Length: 123
Image (cartoon, rainbow, N blue to C red; front, top):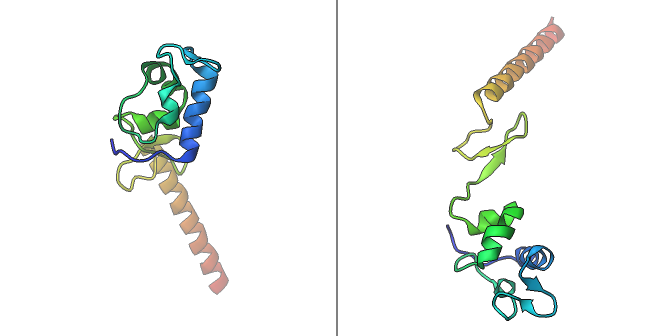
């Protein structure tokens, strides 16, 4: 995992998640488990320790934050044909062989159609 500074939006998401969903957070008293203000509010970098409740209960609720704080985060991209997310693998553009075959078939049909149109214009 590469350690980097959190953006303002990411810090806002952390604060919003803690304030709305954390069972141990109280607006008046702060973190009930630690008897102080929640230290997740002052989190600036992706490295370091996380609150046990935040990591186990709240982090799975926000996929973007979960990718930031876990080592097994895998970058994904959408398939050009069906839009399904799949792990990055070099220059791969399609999620499966089926999508790849369908896209290739469509490209060949498009090329043949274009060739026929050009041929008909010439004759």
